[in-house]
Image 1 (cartoon, rainbow, N blue to C red):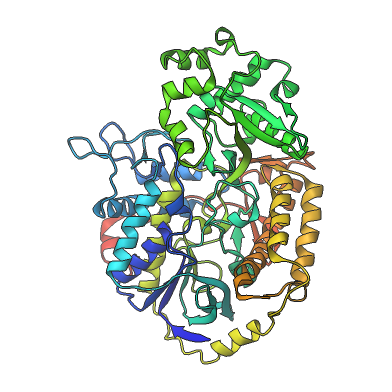
Image 2: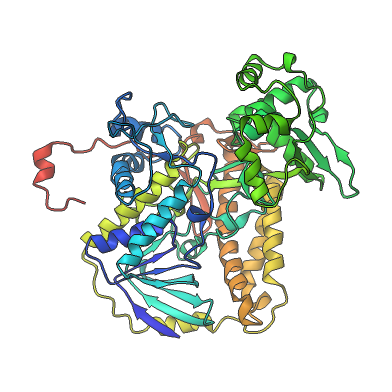
Length: 601
């Protein structure tokens, strides 16, 4: 194997990873490396929405805003630590203006104001957008900076095992997917920018290139926060895209199809009043994520879709013909007025969609799906993990020298303002980089690292295992979507826990690498199982103690404890527990004291 030593290593090449590498270099830490499964992979580069949102302090004259107000908005989401909310608010403009300086085209008026709009779970106009591919523009701009500094990049390289001694990070074992060889990288500072645990679900909006790799941190005892909290919503599955906005407001027909090809316009089976069903479909346009507080409103549509999937059917949105019972005059005032003002009180859903948003049709056509001729297959999908690895205000985990940034960090709880994830990518990566640059990290001279790595590699069976990693991965993902998604079943979760634990206990015996091409699936499955063990532990306690909050609901809730409703749910070594949130701190703001402080990080 090859062996390297760096002062800092960043794992991941999305917005958070690239910004961390660039920020490290700008702060004087130049002996660094970036490790990535693929430079063009990840969520940041490969996802978007109709108007992908970036959340930051207001910068236009029609708003009165401040750090305290934004921190309060983030904290109000529930199960959010106040000091993290304050960091995310206080540093938002640092990250935003860096992107502006790098050429990301956020809109300005003639006076140079960065105008904004109000997003979900927000009380002012903090949201802005560079268009449907905002995060892609961000990633490309940051990549250009990293490449210009000639930072060492280990591309097509999978980091799969962290080396930790005495609760301090010492290095990481990687596998070169192109050269088919192992690499050991020693470092006392490792930054995980690997995204959320997207590998867990079959039904997900995450791009295929995003799978996460948080399990290796959980394996060495890193504490987590709110692994039970996710954002789920209706999305197409053949081409992964949120079906929000106009897709719902044109009121398409919902259809399920069984294994024999029989079609069912199923919403009428769940609603006594078909007009109520149509009004709720309309509301899904701007109430896209599943919300347990709207279970008797628009979020009941998500439940209906899931129940059809539980029957083994496939679910579609059909834009070619109107749903049963559609009479514009009988719609709610809200829906009727919207369609009337859009000049869309006519025709079929596809005709209304063409009138209101032709680009929505073109998007799918560009990906081989013609909505004028075929139905769109959908499911309720995992879209964002609000929880992750527990971090302090420097985004350092409970393991010394190990940092988590972007979606890998568990800085959000029950709700979060739309677009706050992109802000967090910039803030967290900058904070981590500054902390690494400011601290006195001893030079790493761990001569036994290759030996420690070899001990682990020796456990791998380089022969065919009794089970195929990919098929087991698909089995776990299917069960997660059925039992541990936005609708949670305690019995299903318990059964899945037993399955995951069994696979983990006998992993080396049951699985092997029979040829070099299967190494990726082998390491990914192991990380998936470790992540699943902690996530399921959190969800089991969540179901037992609170039953529902935010983006999920427990079928047959076993009990509710109001005192836990806004607590942080943590896990460590796959054991779950509760802790009270830390309030927003009363920070020191007296100028002379801060001015004369030596350490200004």
